[in-house]
Length: 209
Image 1 (tube, rainbow, N blue to C red):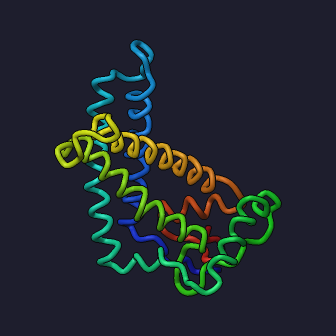
Image 2: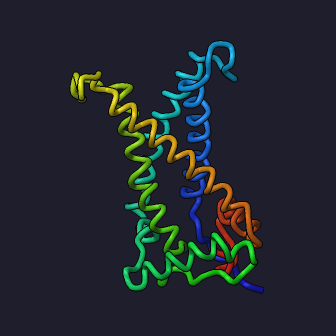
């Protein structure tokens, strides 16, 4: 019997679940704010605005706590890929996820060392966790609370339009990532192990995704 060791600490699992929930609320309310017409909204427009603002602030606070814990605990090392053979390992993962997974082929080699992520995951998480999410938070807070920090006018239009456009584009990218992330966690022969990792934090090392 293979001993299952703790791979994902409780605080990471809580952050993961709460962030996913907040992002889901932000996505739904964002769609309402941008696209829904009068009488066609699943929730009241005013309520959607309040939920979007509160969820965005909660996400910012949660992300700040996450950064403190990530760097304070040393967990950030899991996000840093080994340079040697990085692109070949990332390419192998892309081929596996796009072709091999459907054919039930053996998993490509994961990252060397003690990281629980493969090379493609590490590159993706670096971009999303340390790039997309903070930019989404910053643009949201600028638009909501700090419009005085942006120019009054840009290219003949109100100075807030680049901030709003960037926030909108980042929101679309974040939503796309969330959908892909959920999909990848629910396909393949190791769905149960993936769910175990993010609920109880333990799974057989060979079943890491």
